[in-house]
Length: 157
Image (cartoon, rainbow, N blue to C red):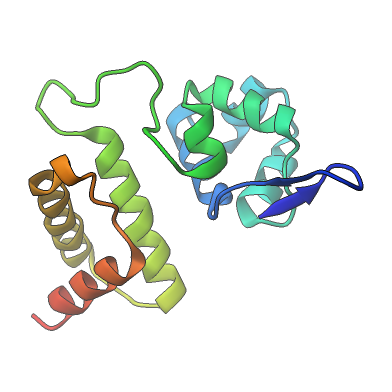
């Protein structure tokens, strides 16, 4: 996703910026809450989420501040979602990792137009989470092909 800033500069965001903005909206209590906290119109938030409009840099910064999320994660999808926070909850679950896996699973389900009952979707998320935790030292990246394989696996059972 890119936006022409002037004739010589083009701003490029990572894929699925809308999905990450939706995640931030959910964190702060919804699209209306995000629009209030970021100083934007709610309709504009909807257009960013749908990919109809591309936010300017200052808007991405405002959204990151409103959600207290890492600007790099919001703009590119790289790094941890939460800034300056422990990766692990009190229960020992890496919440940022779990959120990223859920987003990737939902993205693949939507793209492939697959229907999974909640139990099957949870199985996919759990399997991928366990795989990522086992391979944490290698900084394993969850890709769409991996997610699709797990979806196929649980769909067959």
